[in-house]
Length: 57
Image (cartoon, rainbow, N blue to C red; front, side, top):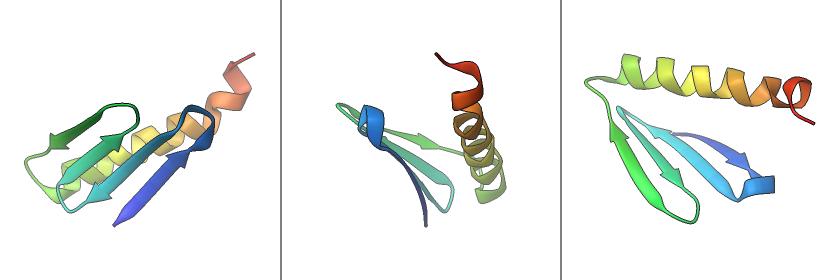
């Protein structure tokens, strides 16, 4: 299981097998066809979050 926490907005994103759970003020689950697709989507999200300081005010 891999977890991304964004404390400033109170958000947790969790990768577990082929499922991505997103928890904040709401909770929802993205069920992917397989673990590879879920991992690709999760990694893309990590890459985007890492670039936030460069593009936000």
